[in-house]
Image (cartoon, rainbow, N blue to C red):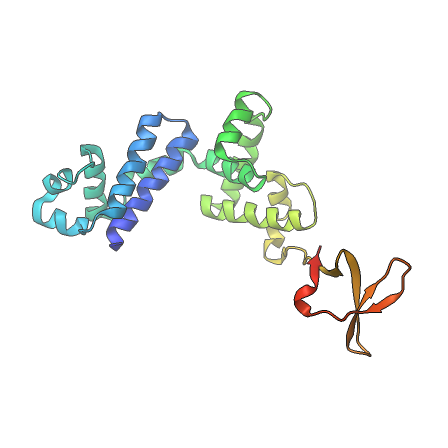
Length: 223
């Protein structure tokens, strides 16, 4: 895919995601998704099309409407799209909350449903999300911090909240997921390695050590 087409397509996909987070109309959401797919599959570079025919050439791309064409023009001329930057600012808090619940295994649709049913009190998360954004200074850094804390907490089977990120902020670089040590089994029976004899043994029901005569591929490793 041509780089410029790819860059703009990714922005349109991101706008689609932000509109979804914002709860905008399905028509607008699908329109940006469609425009992104068109650009992904477009064999010609939009820069070349614009150079030859300006905005008129962009509007002639099948499936691209006037609104999308103007945004493509803006990106070609300025390297950014004002509407996209505005959308990121408007949805910053919601993006952080969405990211947090994603680490809990909830999709955006599940989060919306739970909020509608009052299973999740959405407003409870807006204040800590705003504080985290102020602390991190960017959505990207805030989301990276949430993901890191989530990975660390899950490996230790600990619960965590957005507030946990504040508590761990100064030690984020030191947070490491707990190493999962897997143990060897053969047909559901535990095994042990004898360093002196350089052999594997299967531990029988009575605790006796039975020399393992199989191959390494027969050993099953479990948490």
